[in-house]
Image (cartoon, rainbow, N blue to C red; front, side):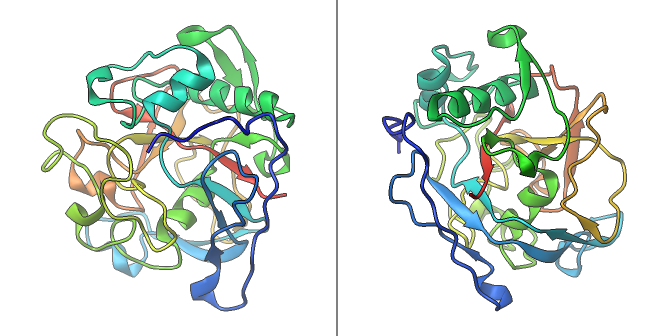
Length: 279
């Protein structure tokens, strides 16, 4: 499952197919000349939060959001091998899990710096301003991430739309957690190789469970109904995480569930996946 990164120095050429029917709003991009395995999620207006399919454990209400841009979302979480190849180091707690296991021990700053390195190598603008290196790196955001041409972390709205993929299942791709998610009841107290359980209908793996995923957004306690391209609060002292982890309860694996932490936090359950605004 290790992806080769030999094309990172080449421009990324992709094409998003579009459709007027809701069930076809999220489709695969043309992967010719891609340097990373990504799914193209079309611009759309969608319902997120505590939609009917999320059940009685969800609280906070349902809201509508609009994404005006197509978004490329990585098919899997970043793996240990990928992090090692791009950053030249491996801060991973569970190294014995193997190259295909989700990268862990990752702070938000480290995840942002990883996307900057990918952007620099591919000749794209960096989406974050970073200083320092390794686990001591510090990164900041400024303005609408959708306007940046480089790699970045997905916004919370982009992440949830991709996780739902036009459906209202409890978890990303199923109403049965064990179909799609590694969580505390089935993970055996450790992370797992990516893409070993079922994907959602967009072909995206592990958006429920395995590793918590850092999100671009600074944390806002409440959504704004009818928001267009929302991206959180740049000045927030906390960043959003989504999807739950191998060590968290099944409720945290729901597509609507939210978590947050300080951007310098890097516990063994925190990982990430990359995104990019489709050109």
